[in-house]
Length: 136
Image 1: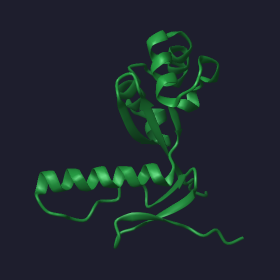
Image 2: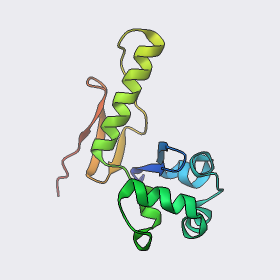
Image 3: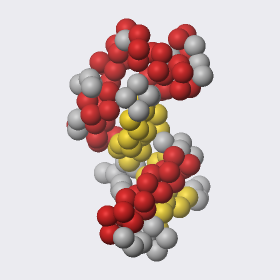
Image 4: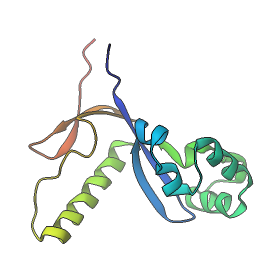
């Protein structure tokens, strides 16, 4: 049985100023939705987008959109390479603050992941994900 490549999502709650990364598994089985948005599941998050006025306003303000353009994809979407690089910078800062020196960053997700920009593989030498060239 072929193993599916894990997608990496970014969850953004502009009302509470929270941004977190999550895997497919975490979206389905962990409490990440509750931690970021305060609701139990994606269905509840859809309801929150429809009926919570302050949440709607915070999304509109952050994204520069009107209420008619609100959707789940504004707060939960597949992460981009650029966003993953921001995560790397945060991890480096945390390591430096906690250890006082630069160390290698552990692989934050599976060794092969899918982002908006394609499929990436962990490069332990450079502590980053690098694109995998698909050969057809």
